[in-house]
Length: 291
Image 1 (cartoon, rainbow, N blue to C red):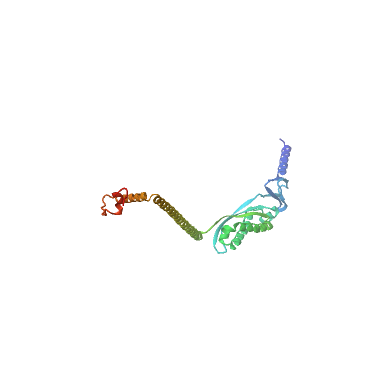
Image 2: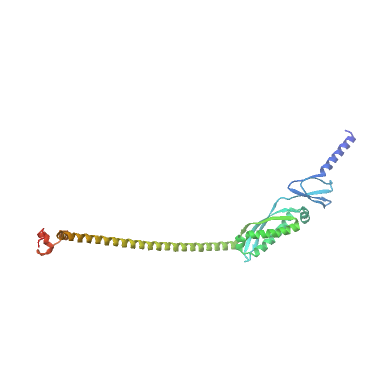
């Protein structure tokens, strides 16, 4: 191969390299900026194939998908000056590539630091005007919405970043505060249990009293019914006796005497002293009952 051929091959290779270095591709999930000698000449370059001047132009790409930043655990004071350890995170994305690059130099770590500083101050302010109960349960969602709106407005205006969400992952009570809170919770639960037990005893006593009252009423009604039936039975018996006496007084007298003998002589060991002329022995002496 002669010198001319080598020179031609080298020239072709240089042309290919120059052509390749003048082409760049922005991925679908990214946006780009084009720098010339370190100065921005084109911003918010969309996904696709693009051209640049080799050597003197530089391309920077930025992920415009949703990004998250975890904040280190921080301690904040409530309105009662109660300390709480809080873990939180920020969900954010680049909205304006030009503004983002100018504010952060295109450094996502720098962007996270700026956001964390704003969120830290915001959480401190929001916790400082709420009670511990409101922060832990009642108003946490309201707090997060207000803080997200507040930080998002600043981030968009200053950094070209849209803050999608700020969320508290965990709230814990530090050391002694945790023990005091648990103690108070245990006391409140014990008080509540005592109230339930007291209500249970009152209810049980009421049920027993009502049962005793109903038992007394039932027994009284049963006794009254029995007395009524006994009275009716006695009346019917008396009527039967009266009818029997009216129809055959002599037989009735004889029957009653037999009942008296049976009751009187039921025990063989008894000794009785009776006048032989006693009316009681009338039917023993004479079955006809002659006087």
